[in-house]
Length: 182
Image 1 (cartoon, rainbow, N blue to C red):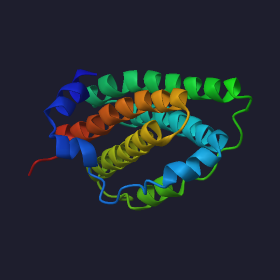
Image 2: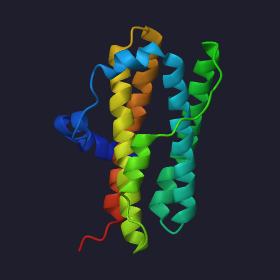
Image 3: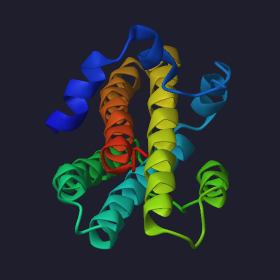
Image 4: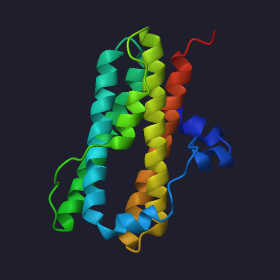
C-alpha cells in the first residue's frame, strides 16, 4: 500500500490530472451513462471482479516477485470489496447483476501486448496495460463523480476514483521496479 501512496503524492498536478491518457473521455459520456445507471453499475461490478482476478493471476504467474505479491495481495481484497459494494448498490436499486459484456477497450489494449518472447517483456506490457486500465477507470469515475445528478452516486464514484488513482501508480511503479534499466 505504501508503494503507490508515496509515489502518488510525488506526482505533479498536471500528471495526476491526465493520468497518462492521450485522449480524455468525452464529457458527454456521463449523459449517456446516466441513461442507464443499471448498465453502468453492472459493467462496473464486472470490471472490479476482473481486476481482482487479474491481480490473483499475476500473483500466481510472478510469485517470485516479492514486491508484486506483497503489493497486489491487498489490491485483490480491495477490488473484491468494490465488486461487493457495486453489487449491493445494484440490489439497493432493485436490479440484479445482469450479464457481463465484452470489454472492447481492454481487449484492444491486451491485443497490443507482446506475445511470446521474454517473460520480462510480457511482464512490462502487462503492468503498463493494467496502469492504463486503472487510469481510464479513474478518469471515468471522476467524470461520474462530477456529472451525475444523483448526489449519492457522485460520492459513491468519488471514492472509487481515489482508489483507482492509487492502483494506476502502483502498476507504473511495479513496472519501473522490475524493468531492466539497461
